[in-house]
Length: 161
Length: 83
Image (tube, rainbow over the protein chains, first blue to last red):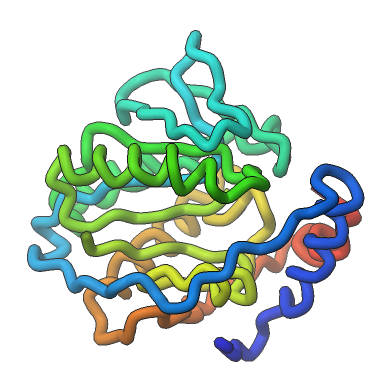
């Protein structure tokens, strides 16, 4: 187990598990993987890399329904108006500056400064508070992977909410 | 596909085991820093992306060193006293 000095969240998993079982899903259990996902080094230098954004803030296009707890992913073009729908964090606060959870503008700034090559045209967003992991694994994750592959992303950045 | 994740909770990340994660001690809903703190947003995103190019082993969780210092929001969230 990773030991990080200054990690103030050790023990939170048990607290959250009890909370979720009491409030939402009596049989809730964390999904535990046996081994890590394979690590792939980017082949393109960062200054030339196309960066894809995947996040869990529940971003979706204005006028389109939120994905909710379906586990599905919303495809959000980085230049399209979007909003946030999520029950697990202070959405009104985040809507004052969505960069805090959906950093498309931040990535664009890094592109303008030459830190990255470009931002992939479409971001992928799920609503991270999905208690039935299979929904994400069967719906949102394949959509995210397909989108990143179709856009020929060199490096995907995953941002939690 | 090369991927780098940001995490607020290393303990849970250890269960999921993504290929590479970067820990920031930020509140839920403000993982990249506070509203209006563009410098922090950029610093965290930049640091995470750069970490993808550093030598790591699959499953590594790296502490980027960013901490929430504005108030006790993160602490209250971890005690389930705040959203």
